[in-house]
Image 1 (cartoon, rainbow over the protein chains, first blue to last red):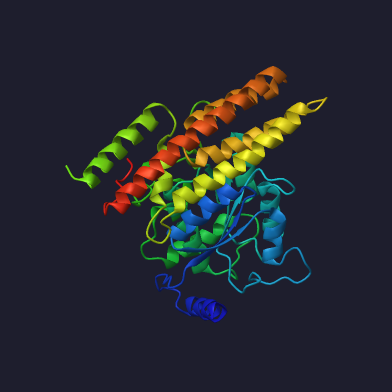
Image 2: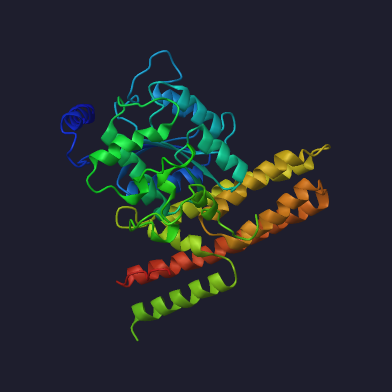
Length: 236
Length: 152
């Protein structure tokens, strides 16, 4: 049932290129974390934000779910649900979140799926590396509801444009630009910051305190937000 | 003052106390936000999972520290894991012990590590008691027909 719904919705979105996005179905998020406690909370955070969730405990399993670990490659996971976002822990035994990110971005089928990295450690070099590799965002744990609300923007974007419309592989953010033209009222989080470097992510513009209301981006530099997101609790 | 009001007052006092003494920080309130009628036992479930998980981690840490040649990196990895989990429930004091613990790991100071492990176990035990008290209070409020106040 879900499979049919997804296919027909996407076809419709291709024809009606000026219609606002009608998200009648829930976004599907693949959550990856080796810690049981983390998985439980993240799953709840996502469900309470109206997402369908598949939670796995390793990068390996994530790839298996996507069908990347085996010969057969499909655009849907095993149970036929399209994945709209992948959120993964950075520090995991075996395959790190960074390695998982790379594998996803290397895949022609899945590179368009937004990937968000989580980490309990806010290391600038780590954040930079992930963003450079194509991560949409980097969230410092513990993840809050406000963080998840922000994530929903990426999912909306990806679904509007559709997986087929992959601009080049180089700048993942090219994906957002056609969306800006399509959406009559684009939330500021998707406003193109194309004049900036390719590392810029429009989603990082809004300041955290106003995460629930979309006001104009306050900071010109895209790298501000990851730094703002540093939780300066008891000097880690 | 009726029973519900009394229990609720106690609840406020107790949560204030827990915050003041550093047993819990803001993150606990964040966790409570995720509890609703669809998931009415969410906080209790997460907390239980956390304590179960910590038992395993404490055993792992103890085991690693008992080795003839201690692998401090491994110990540090366990502490890092524990610290991450404790952050989800807002276990402020535990988090702080972890920071010290990791410093001792880096300095390869066995005695310091052992002390920290003991501290972690003691603090964990104390927190578990406090949380059990809190949950019991909440159960009483609900049983008396009241609703659990929002945490600020």
